[in-house]
Length: 248
View 1 (cartoon, rainbow, N blue to C red):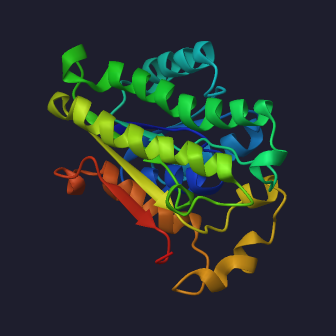
View 2 (cartoon, rainbow, N blue to C red):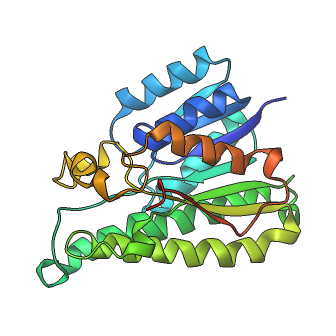
């Protein structure tokens, strides 16, 4: 019987790759998106081509009402969750701290931190044995920026991902005895659309010389690590942060 996975920000990049690979590995997958329904439906088609059942579900992860409705819809149409990938996230244009606005910081933390916490809360309410669930796994997407700091570019993004690191470690301990494993992935320089949305479309090419393996990574390389952490092969792995960064 296929397990049920929800991937936030699943319509592009690492999220989309994770959705498709999960379907190939035996999951039914809910593809969360904020605005691009066409992209999400395309991912659903790939999920179904891989033999899984897919569901595109709209929600802004920083909006509690929308998130709760999303989790209800996933449960009613696919069944109770066994997996959550907190992938939804944003960057902003490259800037120094003294050029940033409070509005930018609120958006950064609302989506990248509070959104992940909110989705994890709802997943735990379905998965925890304390709530009558069957257990499961959560994978939070952090970033190598949490270790590097991203000075002069994305200092606020790096700080938000540092919060995700702490959240991952604490939550893992909190729900370990309730059948839920919680781990994090820290991608490095990965070739996805997020760089263009931050105003730096050539960022991977410009910085790949700083990576020990001398290239950027792919969304699928990150997805493979995520799917392993979700799988029974990682049954004794929790509270771990896995760097997928080419040594950077």
